[in-house]
Image 1 (cartoon, rainbow, N blue to C red):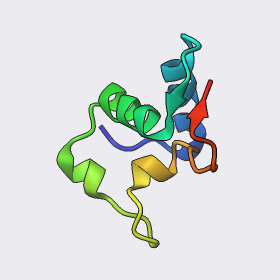
Image 2: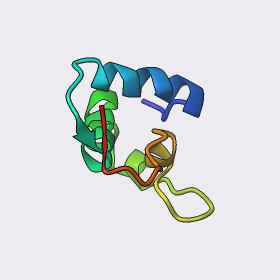
Image 3: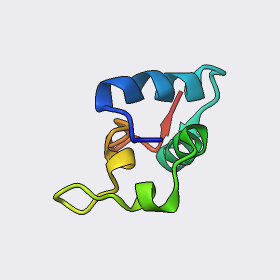
Length: 68
């Protein structure tokens, strides 16, 4: 599977969070990775700044510890 665009990723993140539980950024990123079934190679794709592409597209870059 290819890594979805940032716009498409929003729907995936919302799906992960639809149960209303508070989650850390790390938990959200992990759940998105599992939901998408990303391979090790896909997880290794980096942005120009060195951050994994799939992580940068989750939108979990704020300074809050948890999202709910």
